[in-house]
Each structure stands twice: as structure tokens, then as C-alpha cells.
Amino acid sequence: MIVKKRISIEDVAELAETSVTSVSRVMNNTGYPVSKALRARILQAIEQLNYTPSSAAQGLRSTFNSVVGIVVRDISNTYFGEIARGATDAALSRGHLSFICDTGRNPVNEFEIHEHLWKHRVRGIVLTGGGFDTDEYRTLIQQQLERSATFGLRLVATAPQGVDIPGVSPDFSGIAASVVNHFLEMGHRRIALVTGPFPVLTSQAHIAGFREALERHDLPYIPDYVITEGFTEKDGYVACQRLLACGECPTALCCANDLIAIGAMHAIHDQGFSIPEDISVVGIGDATVASYARPALTSVRVPRYDIGARAVEMVLDTALPEEHTHLPSQLVQRASVGPPRQRRNF
Image (cartoon, one colour):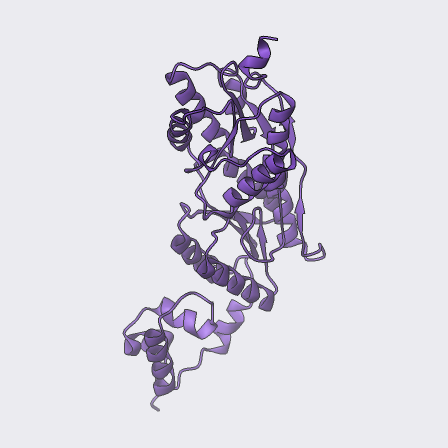
């Protein structure tokens, strides 16, 4: 008796002159970008070989592992590390493991990670960090959301992604506005902002809140006082050097995170200025390093651990509503903020 060899996905990939991964993406309609020419070759190979996936393999794909994927934009940033810690503890308390993946803020890496997480049948995915303001990114995230809904999974975000997505986060624009209001109460009028790259949606939220607070108090929005550089200490240093080179330096500086603020403080000191006598500085996040800066850094405390934990709860407890909520933040006053120098003389 001659047993006919069953056609496999590997045979399809070989005939289409591509990878098994690409064949899988086309067959499962994952939304991952595949060129029209390659898609056509794969579909032609499937038809030519009369290939159908085995029911056993499909059954395996319909089950989920007790794993939650945590997609982090920059794991070296302590802001995200604390969110990941909260997510990990929450997952473990519910009998799940967390699988932490660092994208390096590279959208191509991010969606490749999505595919690997799907392949390993995770129970859901938490997106940590702001998405990107591009049509391509929004389309891909929307496709991931639709696929998640189809298979009964949850995609949850801890920052804006450019589409309607459930999640939990701080109020990024509200935080920036609250920092401006604090500076205004201290008598400052020349206020600057240093945040991340403009395409990042959290950076845009910071700018929106910053601008709205200024305009609410009839103060001009000065583009030279808004620097979109990056999220590291080096970025803060470079951005602050640019601000200090302005004809009229700002007397107060809002930084999108504490790492930026630490870098900015070094630049201020290196230029011979004093904090807060010449320039006041506020960070966002209230990382441990804020207390040990010199002077100690005033920062907005964001409940990062709670955000990570709540996000995992939303993934695992489908009874929770699919909505995006904001957790409250708190300004922690230390020694890096004071009234502007001219007001000290009164």
C-alpha cells in the first residue's frame, strides 16, 4: 500500500520561494505587511498543491498558553521597567508568566514581536509606551486589535496608540499642564518643555497639555521653548544646551521623564547656572534617581507599578470593560523648583 505524502506548509513555502513564516502570515491573515507579489505567489502555491492545514494543527493553535506578552519600547528606561514589574507580579499572582519583549522603539521590531507572541499563543499583549503617529502604524495596530477580538484575546495599552484601544495610563497631557500650572504659581513665565521625538504620541500629548496650559493663562506658545529630542539623559543634556543658547533663556523646564531631567540638570550646571536659582526643573515619573539628584528633583509621581498590574488584570479578566482609564498622578516637590530669580529679590 502506497501512502500518499501529505502536503505541508514547508512544501508551500518551497514552491513559493519564501519562508514558512510568510506563508503562515498570509494564511492566517495576520495583518503583517506582505508584498502583493509575494502574497500572490503564496496563494498560487497553495492552490497548486491543494494545501489545507491539518485539523490537529489548527486545534493546537486554538489553545492559549498561560503567558502574557509585555511589549516594551525601551526596557533600559526605568519608567518602563517599573510598569513591567507590576505586570509581571500581577501575571504571576494569577498563575501566568510574563514574556517581556523590548522593541528598541523600532516599529518593524514591534510587529515582528507581535507575530512571535501570536505564534507562542500568549493569552494577551500589553503595549507599554506610546505608539507612532503614522498611518502605517495605526493600520497595523488596528489589524492586531481586530485579530485579537476574533480569537478572544485582549490587546491592552499603557499609552496612546493612535487608535481606540482599551488600557490604563497616566493622563500625559494633563500631567504636562499640571507642571506648567505649578511653575506659574511660583511666578515663572518663560517655561520650556523637553520631550521625546514628535512622532511618538506621548510626546504629542505632552506638547498639547503644555500648550493648552500656557494659552489658558494668556501666555504665548514659543516653539523655540519646545524641544523634541529623545528620552535619555544624553537627549536631555543636548536639548537643554539648545535652550540655554536661546536669546532669552527659560527660567523653568518641564521634562518628559526623569532621565531627561537629570541630563538637563547636568547641562545647566556645566553652563554655570544654578538650580533652582536660575532655572527650575521638573521631571515626570518620580523614578528612584529623582531623590538622589543634586538638588533633589521635583517630579510627577506616576503609579507605574499599578499601571502594569492593572493592564494585566484587563488582559486576563475579560469581565472588565474594554475602556481606557487614567490613573491619578501627584507632584512630589523637592529642591529643584523655586521662584524666578527676579522675584527672589522682592
